Image: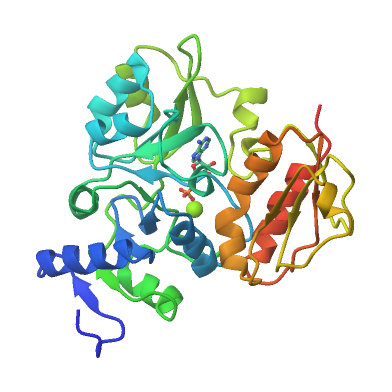
Amino acid sequence: MKGSIKEPHIHIKNDRQPALQAAVTELAAGQPIPLPTEPVYGLAADATNPAAIARIYETKGRPQFNPLICHMADIAMAERYAIFDPISLDLAEAFWPGPLTLVLPLKPASDIHALATAGLDTVGIRVPQGFAGDLIRRFGKPLAAPGANSSGKINPPSAAHVEADLGQKINLILDGGAASVGVESTIVKVEEGGKVRLLRPGGVVTAEIERVAGKRLERSEKASAAIEAPGMLASHYAPGAAVRLNATSVSPGEALIRFEGIPVAGEETARAVFDLSPSGDLSEAAANLFDYLKAADASGADSIAITSIPTHGLGEAINDRLSRAAAPRS
Ligand code: AMP
Ligand code: MG
């Protein structure tokens, strides 16, 4: 699009090729775009680019890093990133493209970034219909996308809602008309042993899933379901090492995560030192957060000292993540 047009509003039905081109240009530049999909409008970004995923959180003002659904073009693309058991493959073949999300183990070499999975070793994958699927095929990489709404607002049913809510923060409005399903995707996970657990009801009705899986869905409130329900504590990555927050010094053998290039007393004897953003950029800090937590953990330190991080903007989600990482666990 021409630079003079600040925020193109493109109707994908009338201008499909320009819409695809404009969307790919934004995505390749690491910018989130609103993505019309059949359940709701998503806010999509390159799932392999941490800075792009951080911008999703920044745009939504979301105060927590949750695992995001990663959208793929087709089963073949999904198989490059995740490991399918036979039941998940049957479900994918039956319901994709469509509003079913499968939680699957990540392939070890997958380049889906930890900020998209909130550091988990599983990934929620869905193949959307229509324009979104075509866009992902053209872009060639998975798109991480939560709803295209500011945190606390309802999922947007139309491009006009997206524009009213987020128009000041994004460069492109893709208008795909009204979302046709209007409810979120159904999320299931096939557990070891072949039990199929319903993590969230949604657009694909459970009776259909049971018919294809050939068994009843597990819906019990037992631990494995509870830990993966949206927003729950244990659905998040936590390092093996102890985590010490608001550190003002670091002990010999501890790993240190600091911010804004500010040196910390004792860091010469730390086992490892990371700076989330030497320039004090919270967006950069968010992009580095999971990588540095994991690297600090992998350094072999028993304890990770983390200096205080500002609480404004993305700092809220960063602090939420850190306090979960520091929470006592059994
Ligand atoms: P939303 O983007 O708002 O539709 O929410 C996505 C939902 O998918 C969140 O509530 C997550 O809990 C769930 N989800 C995504 N990935 C995973 C995963 N790897 N494990 C468990 N739940 C997941
Ligand atoms: Mg949502």
